[in-house]
Image (cartoon, rainbow, N blue to C red; front, side, top):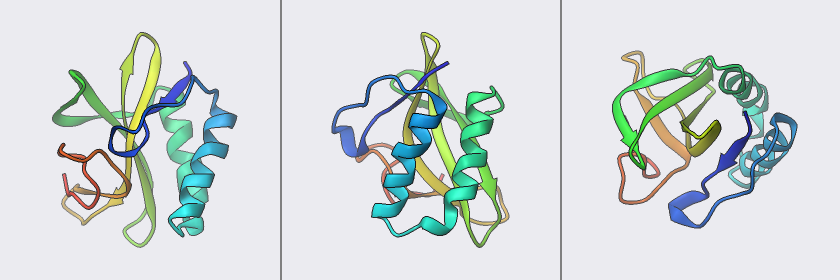
Length: 123
């Protein structure tokens, strides 16, 4: 299953990418936001997503599809990927981290304005 990344705030999308290409793309995203200390967590979360290990994200929907998330790390550093599955494509639309012990997530890396997944939102 390839991954397509929906760029922040509705700024278009990438083509379909395999896991290695997606990892390179997201490494560049983490570099731009100064979060290189999260590369290992991002890699683990990507493994989860590509291996079908993502989990439902409550009742959240995005573009009409149920939202899934894949997460790795702890409460000091972590990465959570938010995506949905459409026609066998993983559609990544936001990235964040664990927000607290209550199972919440903060959209801290990139998100989609005007949605519950906007940058700095907690879900």
